[in-house]
Image 1 (cartoon, rainbow, N blue to C red):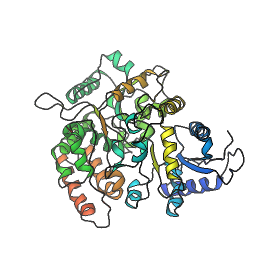
Image 2 (image 1 turned 30 degrees about the horizontal axis):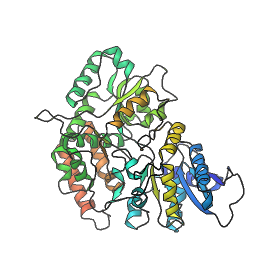
Image 3 (image 1 turned 180 degrees about the vertical axis):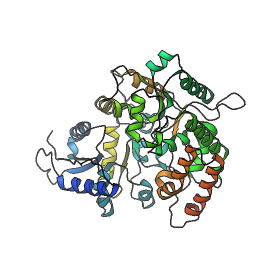
Length: 470
């Protein structure tokens, strides 16, 4: 179908973050229309704009979605404009300020400031209505368990993810098979495995991307849930008094420090995200903690005989012999955060486009094109799954819910000044877990809780049916 398409490109180059940001913005704005087909839409058409971060999913799946929705909505004279850019945030931020945002955005803008100012369009109306498939179930009930857990504000849903992302531990089946190693299901088994790997081979038990402290941040959150359940993570998210000195958090910090001190690859502090991942792919390390974007990110450099597989962060067993935090609940992230703007010209039409996009049939097309696992039950085409994708899907099928962190996006200044430096000292062994927790508790109190200039959203109430919150 003829359409008006805009595709923006950016130059990816080394240099300072400031220079990068300036170049990215200038290129995105100057390059302008590089793909344009068809006439300008007539004045009677209802135009909906999708502003999409251009990344692993590519361009064509979004163009195909827009074409399909226009065809399905031909009686309503709908036009869909697709804007793609690796610097999409820089393109839409000025438009948000000017009150002229797109209807739909897949981006990384700070949603908390938008929520505070009533700038986002809540999706509960469409979620509680019928699914596009015509099966009689609600749109909300078509989502996999936990897929929407991280996108609620004051009991309302402000976003939906177009991929289902979880943090897991990756390994090479071939290496494990040749050495007689088995994926662990408990933390004690994990430590025993790390000890065997260190004694029986010349590779490190764990790769770690030391220059990107975020990987340790998320590992710590996973371990906190395994020690104290989702309640422990929720206390951190709500910055409750004593949250950073609670037993589950201190114990998780001790576990991570022990793992880093004994089993992280030597020299990890000098490695960035891709460098650490390449150490794993090149079989210098046996395991890697990472999200499931690793499959797409490393597929072009992975050795042909590499049998990539994964397992969940192992359970922490209590004195009664049962897991202390539900091992079927997993750490997640935004997963292709899709938001709608209340100030856009046609937000209700944008919500209908989202309902169409997330139908099972369209999600299966999307998954075939992108090789991603979608958040919709039956919405992922598994017909040509690799063994790696099958292993990941087995984990997702048993998921009873997800949890995430919001301090990172809510209080970035505090995270940068205090959390991240303290976490580095924890990994290096120069700060005890107890001192780590005390430092965070002291600084969150002075810099955030008592600071009237720092926005603190209403307490997060996890409505997940997933876990006994244990």
